[in-house]
Image (tube, rainbow, N blue to C red):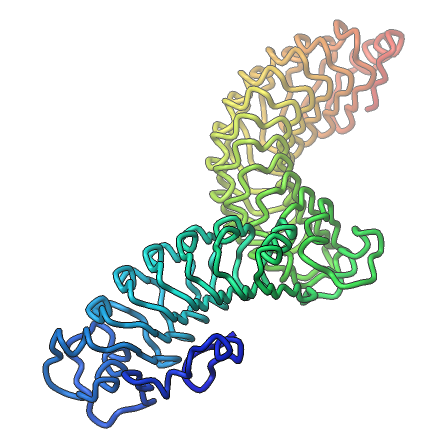
Length: 496
């Protein structure tokens, strides 16, 4: 809806509001003025409109002149600040559509206003309008308004335009007694029954939900499948029903996914040879997400994920990530997979003490001291890194599976307290002494290919051990001739 000037809506005309370009005391601001002084208002475009309206392009603007002005038209002239407008206390009609205004504070005292058009400014806060109780026509189309509370006292309001905002609830305007027309199309209304209440009160309500399309048709296809192969228009209500979504490697854009407000699980897969890097910005506000997997998509920047603080499962394997700082606030994270990236520093994970499974194989990590307070860790994999010291693992007594193959470890001594460990994979290191393994009484699987082990005697006390992979170790003659057969008789299969 547009009202004011030569674009006054027909509905407003029927209610007796004349087009402002024909009103006494209202003058349209010209697109350009030959010589217009800029000294009385912070914003030059606003001052030009005011000076044109009172026919004083230069010179001092007296308080009497300003307060006598009853109408002002400054549409699409680049107004950014309304500072100084508070002096126009006699204004009854004000048209400021399609400008760049973000602060309405100067309007708070203009209590004689009857008609106000602020459409197309990108406004998020209407709080300064609270005291404008004499308004009869208010246009807030094409802004970012979410809260209608400032309108709750406008008992004379007859025409309200709110198309294309972010309004979810109509409670503040349901009891306004004078409403005759309300336009609400393009808002994500949660309770459409409130529209019926407005209608029952005598207002004519316009509410149209435009069909939603996605930039990438593959995303739309996946959403339709998630909705049981839905073939009609996609609406906000339908999108809120999507809680689980899987996207294939052919997806190139996530644009539009910000509308999936109730999404809890999202998987975006790729392949090393056939994948397209995607911008994660569209999912940055999906605060209902609990599980997120973005695999082999060339991701470098994790900053769009910073606010997804309720995530519990996060798989970012096979990307190009170096900086983990955006993950530092994800205190509910239980499982994190960073396999196949370029991470060297795990420090941002220090506070994630609810972690139960951490997979950081194939990175550039050389120390684990950040992990020494992750007491709930059950699974830890950091193969193919540069770690030599296992001392930080000493307090992690809940560990059940540990894989540090292809590192630079020489001693297993820090593992002696890991009594719940069932799987130990330490291939391609520099381990020679298995004595600490004798304390790992829950061990079932052991892999030590490519180390320096000569003696298998420490394995004899491990009653639950079922297999030991010992290829490419310099086993002694005694180990081969006597220990291996003896272990086999105990049910422990040794491969060498």
